Image 1 (tube, one colour):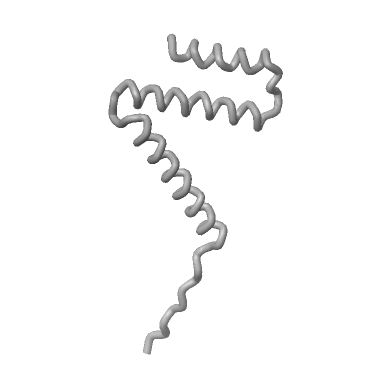
Image 2 (tube, rainbow, N blue to C red):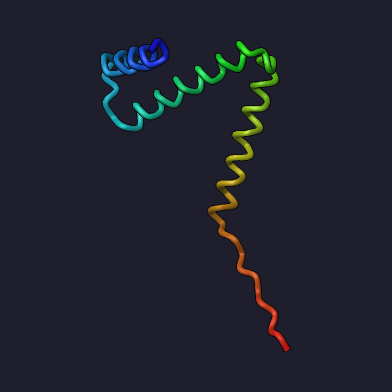
Length: 83
């Protein structure tokens, strides 16, 4: 119950501030969820803050590379004719 209350409180604050557009709202929701995820990871003491930051940067770079590759499209391979 407390977790849902936290999210509802955050959303209420967003509406009070006047963030009406969908993009702004979705970005804020993603930022809230990412911060909660990071908070949980830090509580579990899985990694240090520096390690988490470097891993996040590497992950972002890999996601960008994957999106570039997907945009280029997969090259079609030629089929060899059977004799």
